[in-house]
Length: 214
Image (cartoon, rainbow, N blue to C red):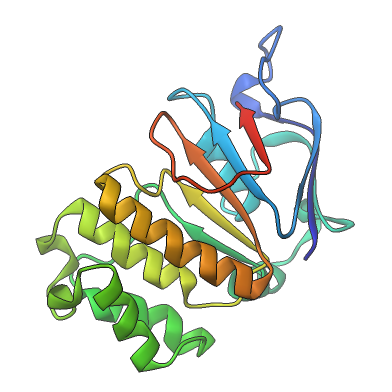
């Protein structure tokens, strides 16, 4: 996948608004593979909603979203499964981790499907992100910031053309945010992938090609 194109997309909940400000809703816009995008947004303006549209979790919008030249409203369940394994990875704002599983088990759930990284590579990421001592700890017994780092490792355990990062460093200090940035940058460059990051104030410091307001 090389281009995600939005053609006058508006969430149904905003459809009756007389005027929508910002750079995305109701406009024509394209995200290109290999580029870095930051979406600045106030709470309630639809940044997580946009990510859920691009990941196929929700379809309550007007307008058209195309992956390359394919209207995503026509994609089958099997096609979405393939896209989520091969083309789009997502670090969710609410993480969507399994609390009853350990940190490592949460990562292995995805990696056992994609076979994207070796065990040594996964353990090295835990070490680099400063959570090697949490590998065998249940997710619901570690801090939210530590959980964010586990969710990042899981998100990187697959091929992708675009990486969605929904408030990825909301609970991280500057030092850990920089470590996360460097890891993502290297992984995305290796894959030639685009990055779409959202923020309501604190954002991850990539060299963005474009900063957008929602």
